[in-house]
Length: 129
Image 1 (cartoon, rainbow, N blue to C red):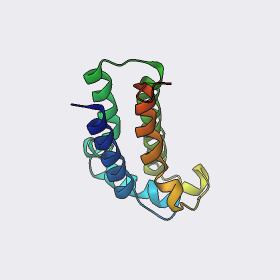
Image 2 (cartoon, rainbow, N blue to C red):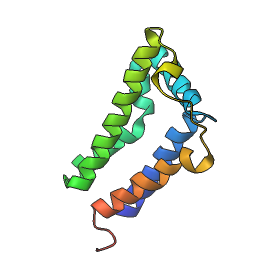
Image 3 (cartoon, rainbow, N blue to C red):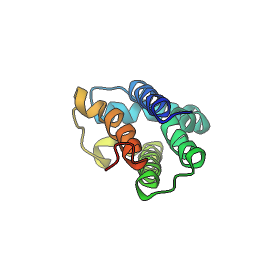
């Protein structure tokens, strides 16, 4: 499979993730994640498909460069951070005690659609820097 196809699949997966988590505020985003987490943690991991896809790309392309592994690492930290917050929510701690409620505008909501796929292209030295 060529790099551009993998790139567009990455964009599609990131759009999917952004849309199922979509909310006007950060607390809303975490509440959306928490509702899935409460239902089934395995389903929660499956809905974070970009993490699984990033691991697939590392293995499929046999690319274990720093930038490629950084994408996987940041995705892992994102999921771990969300699970930590959702565990606190399960224990009855309110979101206001854990973090402030930040308004999510369009750019902030879809920033991952730009950052991760383009980082993927840079990790593959697609632009020949």
